[in-house]
Length: 347
Image 1: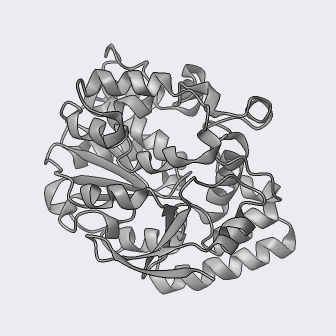
Image 2: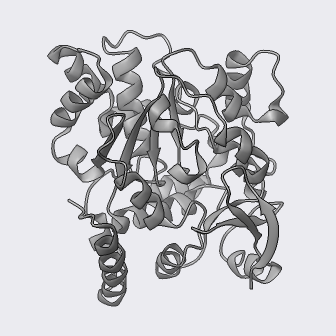
């Protein structure tokens, strides 16, 4: 069982420390974290315990009107949208000197620091990330959070990423800045997430695909649960500072989305500049430029070669190549139940 704790965060969430039994069970086919994991009630967000040390600072983060926050569940098109937005804001003429730097350095993730507690990262060099931190944050201390401080000190207009739900960010975020939320069919999300867990030393997942899908539906993977995350964004989709888009819409007609983003961000880019953005952020172009993580020690070499890294396929419907009829039926029921409660239909 999970053991209750009386700790409460600035957001009002109660911290529940995962039991030794749960950690041992989950640790049988994946690598976990040195200080264990916690759930945050009432929604049940699952994070490394280290998150609690950053939670208040993240909740009270000072956003600016010029900021853009790209928010998603993992493996929903996050890196793609980051590249789209950063290129629109900083590189529409494809002449920015930092365009070749990894997106993690140009568009930091406000909640990334908590995963550095991963046992799978022991002995892994992150020299490129540390170098980027010192360039953006001279004189700052690594132990105070590299990604968080990079978000603080990045030059305007800042493009930031978060896998956190709205509930763990300031309730005034949409009054302070613009948020772009990308939602993707959970079937494709779980396939992409599975391979990500396979190739990263952070996770070193060795279990079956079916097991992984059940962990996902049972909210036993980091960043889950999926549905409350999507629901909180969906409920805010009509706010003028909110841009809610489906991954599938981006894949079917990227230029329409670029034009809408152009209007949303108030950029007045020309068609030629939008064409540049489409080219620079295309799957093939991003894959050719290499991984968004420059510290390749973070990948398991043979798995990276076999399955690919961040940029594996980038397609819609790959789940059809992985689900058995029984597993598909089970997940369909799970999707129908939650999607109907939210009132969302995937494209």
